[in-house]
Image (cartoon, rainbow, N blue to C red; front, top):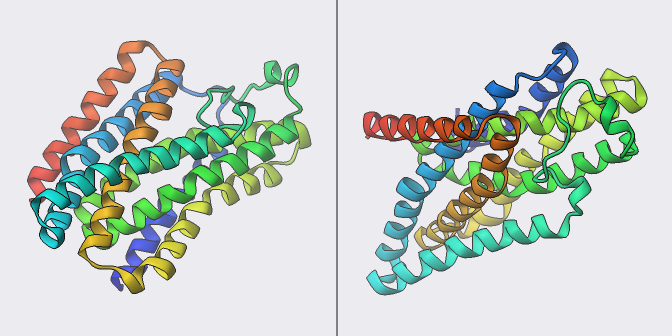
Length: 266
């Protein structure tokens, strides 16, 4: 399998895990909130550790090698915070009711949500919001896979875990509104397609001009995007669905697993 196809397949796996969340919503009478809390904290730990320890450092090495020590050091820091700013801006432009970063009912029993939301509209706009957020995640996964599979695979696992409750958030209200599992699954599945689309756009636009400087800038921005997602989305959601310490324990476990895996694959 070519390097590009492998990177694209990994991105597809990460994005379409929203479908797993949709399936869970149909077969489980109640979401296991303890497991969800620990899993989201674990994902945050993986993404924060790999972003700060591996991706940010590699971005700096690329930029310092192509631009020199001082310019490279400044540019990687700028790229890091620009990545944060971009994902924060996307987050800001999406109304809170449809924003997947805003905690909402994600349990299979959505009767309490009926009183406050027009469920079909909520589900459709949640799917759209998730698709918008998944686009830069797809680009991040694809570029990481093209550069280093040892970094990309843990990122794919972490993103896949955090996409599962997003799939639940899409499918539950649509299913409650329409009674159609097929339609609910379809919306959830399509929202996850934004990640491979992000990968495809990245390949078409960036590959022809890719060099160490471009790689370094993208890697720096990817680190910023993933740290922001972890702090703004994963950790608050983990705390919402379980006890405070569960999310922290999960985060520490994620960091430890990521640290050991990087050492073993070095």
